Image (cartoon, rainbow over all chains, first blue to last red; front, side, top):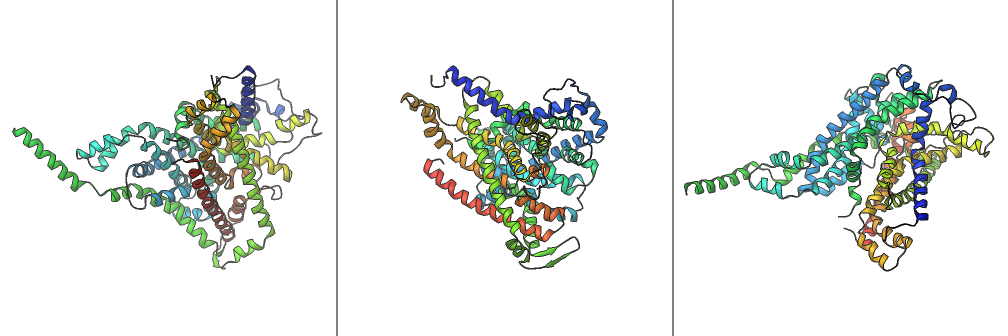
Length: 280
Length: 313
């Protein structure tokens, strides 16, 4: 068969995959190894590849060294959840309009949304800082939620639109012909059919929201108790004595929420996110 | 009989109700889009307009004063700024080039019909989905001269005599940041290429295979042309991300040592946020927007050409 490989080719493919994965996973592996070593072992020079004293001690000590760690993780999850809910409220109706309706300035307005993807927050930080200040939102959760929502709306619309376009129109048309109002059709016919897509897009937005918090947090928020995990940990790196093993343990614990969600939904997520790459 | 007429009457009543109740399509559409549009206008468009206005001002914490094109003139005259622009483009082309090459290799490997590929696909994703800042804490550790594995390996192999601090020297800091940026960006490129490759019709490959075409030939003559539109879109998308890449550099080096990793976006942040020179910072931000705009226009034209040539959509 066309897909059959010789033994040698198989070995070559696996070897190349392993090299590729080492590049991708090395930082995680080293973070994990560092989190298992006692601090004295970490600071041994020259570098030792093996340590004789691995333990999970750092995972319990870290809660004392970084007293707000639990709070940081909560903040991260809370901000990401709020961003996701708000983003979806904006995205669902808009995506439906782009997937189904014809209206003036359709392509132009979609281009404006997608154009937002061109800017990262960094370009707009200065006036955004002033906008948030004049609204009295600096140093609140909102300072991190509001810009987060704005920068995820375009991606959300794009992803959900491609999903909605794949749902057959017949049911909607039937409901419409039966006299259901447009809003009723959207709520009672389209949304239930689109539930799997909503979950995928919602998860993608959540992961994006979880990942993008750093910049807005270090710029718009000075309140420690409100910092999300990346910003909270970054503060510690500046200190004189970084307890690296606990730092790594904390960092790995902090990505656990997204990793768990991702592992459960990875099959659908990959398909949803890369939908635009596949020709129909 | 009466039932039937009643039903018929109901029907027409329904249509009448529908007509009065349902909005015209375009009004309904704009009602649906409106909230998102207003939000984006408030949080993105208006600040963008403000950035343009501020770029003509001398704006500090105290207040602002109109200075015309002075901020731009300063940038045109500044050799340091010229270097920053050159560095930014070098950073972008190098990093995007590596992401595309690695993405293509990675996708081809993951597309090979070998046992375990579903698992490999999952293992590729983490750098994409975790917060960049956390990934960079890992890279900080890897690059550490005394305790990091990279310097340790170099010493063990006898390539360097003592510890090597990757982020302490201009050259090595720059390329180290590129590697970290490539690490962050490669998974997305890989998975998009993989999805595109899986969308290529098997018939094409089988026809070529029957005709005796080898793997390499099939890759060059079928895979690459078929996924060309995706390659082009990923190039632009990842060019924009790389151009705007801030967190990676900020966490690894804060733009140092001695400006060696200061790209435009880092320079903008340092000027405006770290030094409170809002006007000068805004002028830099406007230049970024203009450059990205030119870039996107170029890209749209290339995409049109590619689509025409390879006949998709």
